[in-house]
Image (cartoon, rainbow, N blue to C red; front, side, top):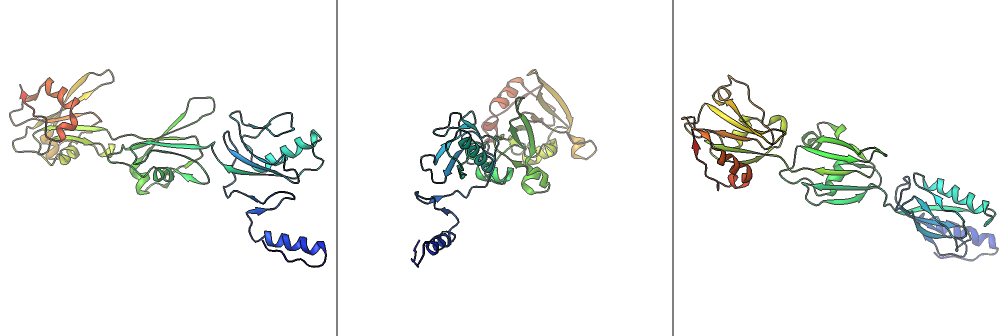
Length: 321
């Protein structure tokens, strides 16, 4: 800043103020160096945040302080710490001013508080994303913003994004957001605002094993649970091979870990005379040949444990009556 001295101290003072006004980030306090203020948006303060305190004409009180885990800050010469969590910087300015007056340290203090760093609003993104990350919720942050910070979704990602957020003293609140309408923008209400403290988890897509008389047996991810049916999985497996049986079988685990065999009218589904059947994660869909041979228990175990090998054509099955 360049100053030109004219007659009179008052003219010099006006010239100095005019020059500093050219850069709003600078403020000169008597006897101190200019202070560079943060451009961070104003939000309520939390534990771990870093604050810059400036007390006019009192360099011994001006400093950078970090909010303690208990949500308090300590200033020299003040007997008690000041609780600052859930307050705006302007509110903290009033508290510090009142404390300095109450303890007769300064008669008429002028205090400014700015945020140097936010650390109290972490958002973590993990799971089936390209770059799992933790960042601070500064300003307006949405769910899509968070997923973009993590580099986007990996393939195959699950059909839902699971968001866990603090709920006071109670158990964490859990919310599930369907991926498809979130990404394609068909439902803008799903792109919820994040405030910090959220854990975002993108599960890996559930798998369904398709085996037997299909052109490409393998393990296939569930992209859309509402559209995961016998027909869609057969299509994913490139269709039926010649001489397929009229009845297919779904092998499904219950909540107790027992596997059940569910017959399916495959011929009726193919001819559109029977409704399509919904499949679930970890199902095995077996299409026998025209002789109606059934899958063996050994084959069920092999497909369950080595679904990825099945997709590569490594597992060779044999049926038994």
